Image (cartoon, rainbow, N blue to C red; front, side):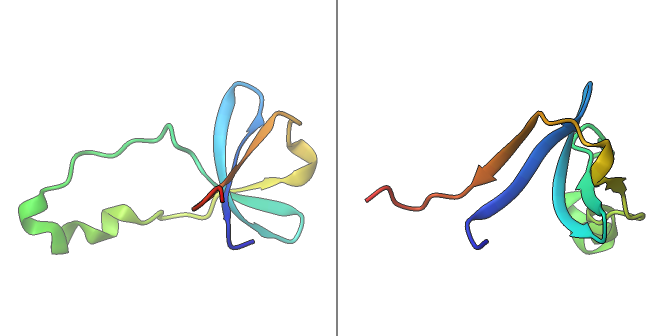
Length: 77
């Protein structure tokens, strides 16, 4: 959907941000993982740090039903 921003939750004691799917698994980002600050003066050298080095998947069968869906609403009228 054009208005979908994704969904978050799904695992007890942990909040994951789901961004896609692959077969029976969901692709997710862990918003609790942090990185060291980037040097904005040499940003072109730091661009690789903005990308995940590995693909994180979780099987749909392991999801907890406590999931929140996010949608973008540009205008209420």
